[in-house]
Length: 132
Picture 1 (tube, helix red, strand yellow):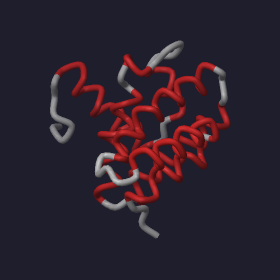
Picture 2 (spheres, rainbow, N blue to C red; picture 1 turned 45 degrees about the vertical axis):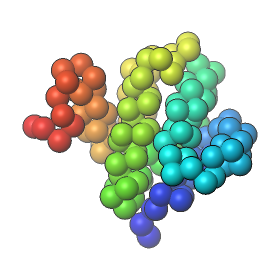
Picture 3 (cartoon, rainbow, N blue to C red; picture 1 turned 135 degrees about the horizontal axis):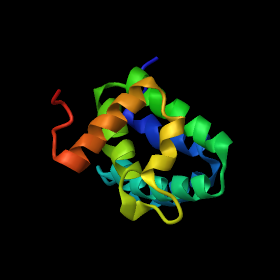
Picture 4 (cartoon, helix red, strand yellow; picture 1 turned 90 degrees about the horizontal axis):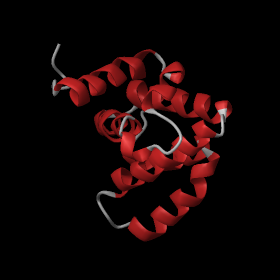
C-alpha cells in the first residue's frame, strides 16, 4: 500500500513517541495550513535530536525504518517530503542542540543513505540533488 501525505506526521508520531505531543499541538494549530507537514518536520528534527542526545536507539531505528519506507513506499509527494522535509531538516545544524547531523548516519538504510548524500552534496557544494 502506498503511503500518502496525510499519513506522514501520524506515522512519525508513532515511530517517535516523544514527538506525539508536538504532533498533537501542530495538528490543532496548523490543520488547515497547506504547509502543515513541512512545519511539522522542523519540530520533528528538534525532537529527534533530543532523542539522539538521550541515546534512544529504539526510536532511531523506528524512525529510520520509517524514513526508508517513505522513500520506497511513498507516493511522489511523500518521497519528496522525506528528502526535502525530513532529511534536509535532520542535516540542518541549527536544529541540533547536543547532536550533529552525522550522528544519524549509522541509522540510515540504503535509500535514505543515498538521499542523505545527495542532500549533503547540496549543502556542501550547492549541487542539485538530482545531479550525478
